[in-house]
Length: 310
Image 1 (cartoon, rainbow, N blue to C red):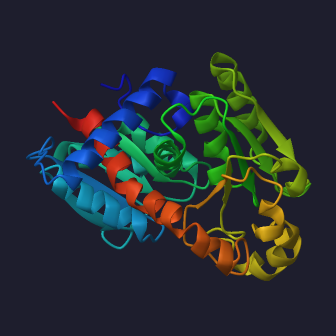
Image 2: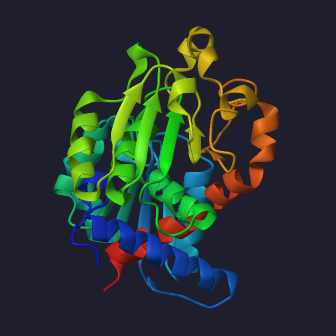
Image 3: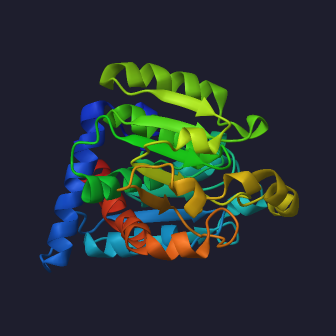
């Protein structure tokens, strides 16, 4: 069982806890594929607070709770007094009296941290502007499926905007011993504090964490190349400007020619084909990318069960 009440950041987990989640997720996936009932959270209820819209997050968490024998409640700002200004700490304490766990998808990471500080039940970070730990744990499981269980020494390169995915990739790679490079424009590097923390985490596993500007230099001999949208939610007004800035960071055939011949390409979706990734590359690696999308279900089930089981 995890030694933490909450799941807010991969940085908070030990190396063993990261592996525990991945191993349990693989077991739950096998059980689900075999049609074996696994009602580990029977009678439990998860509150799902959405301040940002979602496809994969809502469906995977809601379906996951159903498969675990529990129930999920969708709660938007329109459904909660949070949307009318009720303090986070009051909402957290009230919901803790009704629910067995709370999942939040929001903007500022401080909102999740405050919620967790006042909640007496587990709180799961389903995305903030700073971190997206559920997605990166999902990607680690997907890499295991396609590259083998031992991730130590693999080279993973992220190409694009140094956003919440990049931040969480640095933590995730450090915990499993993968060598990680973020190739971004200088002005769009990932969070510097997280970069330093990830480098410290990497000392335990022998991983390396680096930042580069040249994507072609970064992807040399890469085992895994990952990307994400150039304009995240809340940055829509920057979209056209970002398209020009990030054009040299497109994941295309020319870029992948420098990578290992057995490279896999991943994308957390939604993908803007023709921008951060070409249509051809997206379709060529569709089997990996949609395994990645499916694995949100299995990893989040593992996280919920480990946090919420009696």
